Amino acid sequence: MMSSTTERKDYPVSMRLPEADLALIDRAARLRGRSRTDFVREAAMQAAEEVVLQTLPIRMSPEGFQAFVEVLSEPARPVPEMVELLKRPAPWETSESDKR
Image 1 (tube, one colour):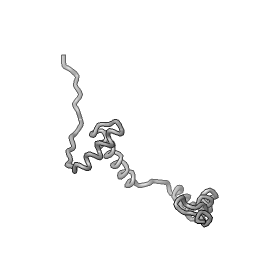
Image 2 (cartoon, one colour):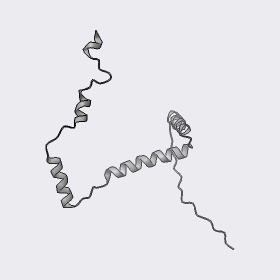
Image 3 (spheres, rainbow, N blue to C red):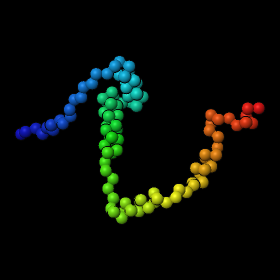
Image 4 (tube, one colour):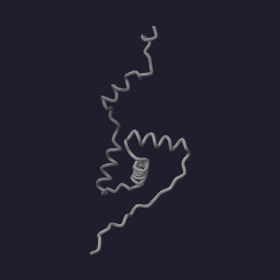
């Protein structure tokens, strides 16, 4: 009787890192309750996915593209909530009455 074994398809990755980088990675991994390997793998996968998604072409039908161009060609309309928000002073700005 042959035993059923699954061939492992993982590949090692080796890096040389400055001590300060490794210390920061280890600290972050501990804060997440993860191993260094799991933490680095997850961070690398997120970065890789972001790069790939940024380079994917956007496909649409000629009709969809025409509708998209028409919407972009319309005059801009104010968004009341944004107008109100932009009228407020920034948290680091002080009004004249606060200076007195």
